[in-house]
Length: 256
Image (cartoon, rainbow, N blue to C red; front, side, top):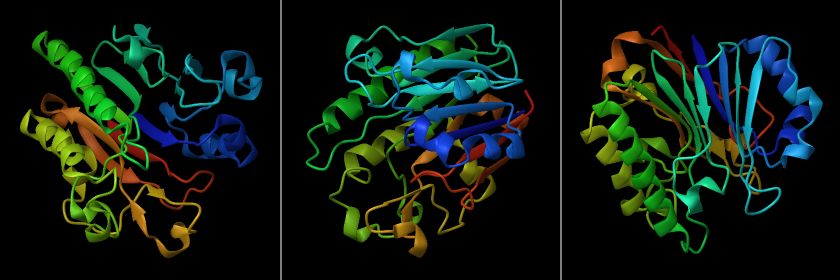
């Protein structure tokens, strides 16, 4: 089962930049998209009705053209949920919870702290509220995958210029500690399971500075899994060669 996560920076833009060609070539079983940036009535039919895939969309209710997530799946889920019961999270179009029975998959667009860091408290609270829900599901015996744009680089190896960004949102100590807490709580960073020391492996590059040409990037897109899914994990990778957004796709192979 190939599960891919990709922040596409707008579904309409992605379609114009070859998203469907990539989809037919990569053949993922499940794709979790972030930053779809489209109200329900504005989602193109070409994205809604893809042969072989069932599609689910959670747009932002608070602001049009902002955030939004989607899941495209070849495998029929038992249940799909857009809400976790926290209003200021649920109305931003940031989460889709897909229950496949053998495991729960979350496709998530974690908040950005914003350039002046005013949304860092919201971002930290978002982490806490989402993973508190996951903790309850784990207590009930559920296995979980949480994939998406986490908007945080965990370790210095995960960005090109760690020293220069120690006071930048996305690499603040209080943001990074949230990923430390996940690891301490038994979550696994799937990419590091297969590439523990591999540097210059990034999933996001700033477009304004044309950082991708120089590979001055950040690894902020992840699949974290509960440790009980480790025997089912067969691979994890970053598709840096795939264009079409300021992020690239990241994927795992899971045989639950």
